[in-house]
Length: 501
Image 1: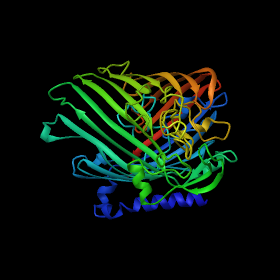
Image 2: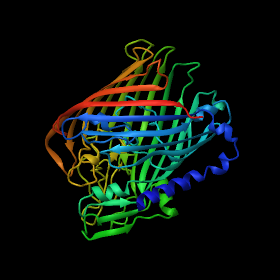
Image 3: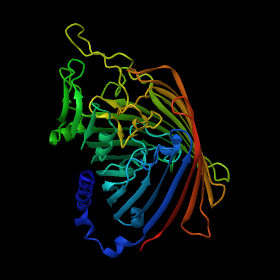
Image 4: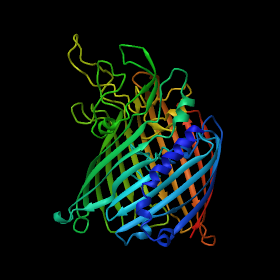
């Protein structure tokens, strides 16, 4: 109960920051085009876990249990309601009562949006789209995906590319900066085995910047590149030990919650409390470079893209070479009744700067920055929220662990991911996902032999014209391989939306 009260207090504090702005607007305008939604979902499968694509990239509102479900209700007003105005306002509240999830009651979203021209501020917990990737078909971004429960935050951004007029619209920029607070205190404490590390009340920070070169009015080809970074920092740490040279246990440690910690998150710096003689940087720092080549024709579009993931600074630049990448290609086809979008991705994370790490000392005065151990951290456990990876779910999330360790045990993988979607009619649409991966475990805990795994999802949605606002979705999915036990089954959901005011 103490945790829930703290969470609600944080939400009320964040949302109240928008009150002076919103109260200056007409109340009638703020309630125009507010929509409600009510949804029920049920999953029935065999095996020990639900198929991966039933549980992943659902903004954390999912369960790995073989049989689960939820009842969800909420309302929202989109900023697009005011699309012709300089000032735009939006808000939303979204709650769920689940069965066999990590919580018995979930505040999935509670947020307010204010936008002036190209600049938007969002306060609260909101389901956010991935940067630059297809949210329906992609396996997920390497740094931030759709795989985790929304983190309450204050986020300032340019959500769409802003053309720089003085370049003749040949250059455009977009980006964001955000600070938030984790809400999974109770899950971490309950999940962690005795004497295993976990944290409480830690903070979240993310930022990104992208530059697009091209002008589609004159030339169909454009190039986009940019940088996305995020980290977990601050709070309290439990059951920590000094790195390498000292196994003294630090039961409850302040990880830094002052202004300097927020600055060290923005520009990576400082040190962790258990770094000992070997300073790193404070917090669990992650990020990726992004590159995209896009060709836009009048009736179709194709783009190729790549993400290079890094942790701390060893792979941020090219001194060690870039072998670990997510490569992708996506095609939007001319309108037809069969296939609308086709996507293929290849993920490779086996290098991680090599398997050797050595700090500089008197015997060997050379630092070798290897053994990056993606998504894992000696203070914060794993790059996760409520057990699900904040990054790509193909690097299996900690929630699947049976040893009580908040860590990613299969981060050295290579894999192929395919996605297809289409709209056979105005009432039906579908999507298909297939992934095949091979895992070597981690450098610290390698697998005896490579482990192969297949994941599959087939999903069909029906929106009947005669029942306005209603839609139903049925899905079939399976896991097959030795990484997760074999399982297959079905998911069902029914949703109703309509105007609230």
